[in-house]
Image (cartoon, rainbow, N blue to C red; front, side, top):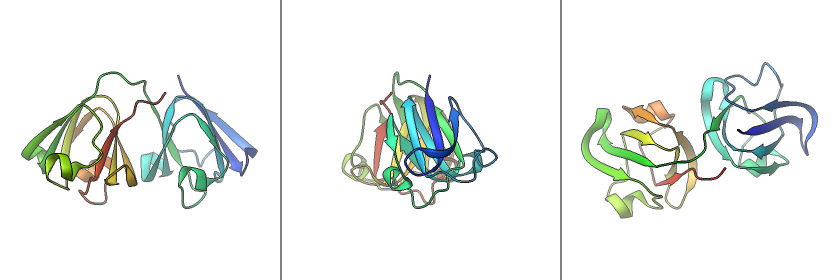
Length: 173
């Protein structure tokens, strides 16, 4: 079980909202979010309602202002609780709708280019675990939460393009 607390003001002050699972629209509860405390579990927070916009991964800890989660403003509008880790399996494809070269992954990948000799992933199938796709190698740049399920094209995980530079298992809890 996870617990995250969203605060309207910096340094954990002002109106706040406690959450223990997914929330598709925080804006009906808070006007903005300037600090967050993750007491347990791991969460992906989203800039826009319904799990859209820029995504940020938060593990247990204090985030006294939006700079601490690498946010660009005080807009946090939805969140996903990430289930506890278990097994990890993901199948990656170089073309949409599971076409082209197939690559299987069960561990972290700091450089997709070095490991698979490609720099774009157009679709994937996650059978186990929760993953983060990063836009650049060594876990840098925009990140995208990849949960169990089928993604026939990169836009289904929120990607602006098919560039995936690195991939990490979500193992924190």
